[in-house]
Image (cartoon, rainbow, N blue to C red; front, side, top):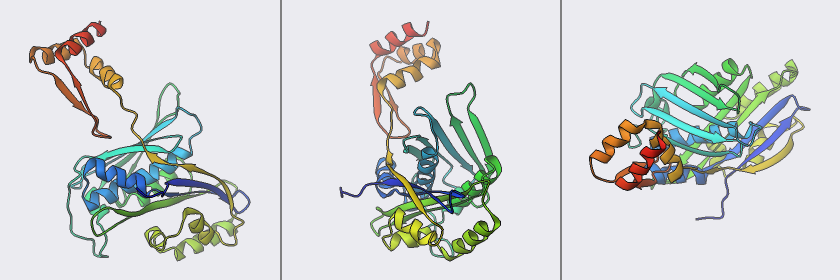
Length: 295
């Protein structure tokens, strides 16, 4: 493992009229690839959503705040689910990790073709009585464009989202990262048009990553002449908080009838975590003890 470290830079520009997040996420996307054995197009799909969710997580304030982003398309990859906390720790999985598709007409991994059309759902658990749920239709299945539409329609925040994952020839992750640029309500027309013009010059975030640019360098490139202020830098990582205790709670929630049916089989049962593929085995005696807790 290299000394490379994934992180997110938070910044502002144009005297606070623009807020910005930029991330480099190669290690966490590679970790997800290893856990799930994803094909190149599945790695790119999951990697883009993990990167976007990490930056969205870093926008949350509360220590226990959690968000889940789900993509439910009609393409061959099936659904994609990612969760993030306010420390930008992420985890996720795809329904069909081994999906293979020919390259797009631009010669790139066809994430849009893998995802298809459908819905994007964001669930934010901010410690209130009810979680916040925002849903938008997928417009391309390419992830970044779909998140851009989500921010504009569900959060009423004009945004530009760019996400990229580059693969090596051996199908490991070469680079991953992206940015989220958001206009604040007081942004002037002059600032907006200047930013729009600048963004037309940014052909792809993957290209900038391929050049070896850091998140700071990408922001300095985009916001030259915008009075960019780098505010802070936080680490981001692939992290799963599953444990045997959490799986026990999930089993108990099934109820005594379900657990008794497992006990009747007379065999230990094994539960696998969707996010990190860790296996948890429960003996018949352990299952009997769980039944007591159902009452």
